[in-house]
Each structure stands twice: as structure tokens, then as C-alpha cells.
Length: 385
Ligand SMILES: [Zn+2]
Image (tube, rainbow, N blue to C red):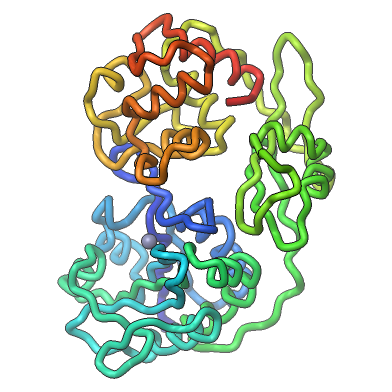
């Protein structure tokens, strides 16, 4: 019997409904989306038909505490959890984390070599470069205490320009090396992957050599439109790895041209987007539209919030911890300082939103008929923030 390998994306969907994107840096979509959208699809391409490799990204495993259950369910022999690192822009390199009580096994060392050949290595554990022994990480401990063979990979630093460029631009090569290290076999070079279909309401990651007008052309729109939609101060300055939001088409009283990718043979049906009522109530419908326009996961809820005078008056709020993805994205777009982008909807965020919407900057919000929410709803109906 060949082994069953369980591959897990770090971070992602949490118990309280909120979303943890993981570290970001130059890979602005964060660890979870990078794994799920960039790396895993290319890895899957290299997995031979007879190999049993399972990719799991449904829930944030450490948050749901379901590593043991997953391993039992899939009868997995080996678990590999995927992350990238964040620190200062100087720090770079990758490593394989195992429990400090153990020495690395052959797979750990093969993966270590794959990582080392791409981004270089950090740390040494029991004389093995690129291996780090830890006993303070949740899944590392769950695995050890339940006899699960597990390692956690850090593929490089999203906060380092060189590492991020390698992860973003040489993803295919990285994916192939990782698959070979995991299954301990050479894999076939597959034909170049077809350009992925680009759905509507999409965020596009800038690749080397891109210009805003070239990206605009792909989506049958204009550079000016994209610059406006993304609030780019200088349309000539886009950076590899940053995300460009592609506006989605709206149906409504004033018909607008449908933005659709030119390379997709059969265009996806245009999503039915109904116009929001301008009622000044920050409920699930407004939140869903906000999530669509900002390109975050569409749940209709603002999760992970503390109970405050502000959050009490936002109907879509779910109390919990960890903040919310869509609030984090708002904070980024409102140019809040980086230590104020934790995804909690507090007075700073509200004031910045009020300034952006051009409504009175009070730091307070009412549950219905709120001026700032009304203006937000008007803008969302025009697909802008
Ligand atoms: Zn991580």
C-alpha cells in the first residue's frame, strides 16, 4: 500500500465565521489564498495519478482543532502543513518545522532540500540545517501527542522582495520540487498550464512584465477604469505580487457595459446583483456587497468583533475574536497605519470611513438611517468603495 499524504493550507476559515488570511507582505493575498489559488493547483498538476495526495483547505485546522479527525477520516500517513513567513524585509529563507523532541525524517530532509534550492534555509535543529524544532505550535503538539507524522513548512518570507518574487514567479518550479520531495519520486514535466479562466469580480495578481493597460485589455476594460476602481495614485506604478481588483458588472437602472474576460470561451453567466436599499443599516446584504466590491470572501457577516458601542449598531457583526477579513481590507484601503489593520471595526476605522464617504466624522454609528452607511450603500450600488 502506498502512503496517503494529507496537505493542509495554513490559516483560512475560522470557527467564528471570520477568515484568517495569514501573513501577507508582498504576497498581498496572504498565506491561505496563495496556497489555495497559486501553489496547490500547480502541485496537483504534478501529482501522479496513482499517488494518494489529499489537499485540504476547507477550514483552518489549528483553529478548528480537527487534525486528528482529518487524519483518521483520510487514513493519512503523513501530514504536511503549508505556510510562508513574515518579518522584516531583510529576513529571508525557508525551513521545515518539526516537534523539538524529534529528529527530521527522510521526507523532512527532502522537503528541506526543495525549499533550500528555491529560497535558501534558516535555522538548524540537531545538526540539520533548515530544520527547526518547536514545541509551542498547536498542530505540532497535537500531532506529537497523537502519534501523527507531521511537519509544517515555511516556504520563504512574504515580506522579503526576493523570496516573494520566487514564490510568485517560480511557483510552478517550486510546486514540482515540493511534490517530488513529498512523494519521493520524480514527476513528469507537464505541458504548460493553460491560462486560468478569469471569473467576474476577480482580483488579479500582478505578474512580472504586466502593465495596467495590458491587464485592463485582458478584462475588456481600460487602464483609467482600473486605476479609478483601485484608487491608484499612479497608474504607471504597479508592483509584482500586488492585487488589482477587477470591477464586476452591475445590473440596475443605469445599464453598464459587462466586464468579461476576453480569453474565456464561454463567459460565465453575469451574477445577478440587486441594488441595495439606501436605508443606512449595515446588515448582511450591505456586507455581502461590500465583500464583493472589496474582493474578500462573501459571507454577509463581519466576524471576530468585540462588543462596543460601534459594533452593537452594525447588524452584520458577529462577536468573537480575531477580527474580520473585510474590515482588514477596508482598513488597508483607508490607509490606516499597519498596526491598526487587525480587522476590528473600532473608532479609528469608523472615522476613516466617514472621512472617505464625506459624511460627518463623529466616530459613532446608528443602527438604522446612518449617514455613513447610506453613502456606503450608494457607492456599493455603483461598485465602488
Ligand atoms: Zn502562517
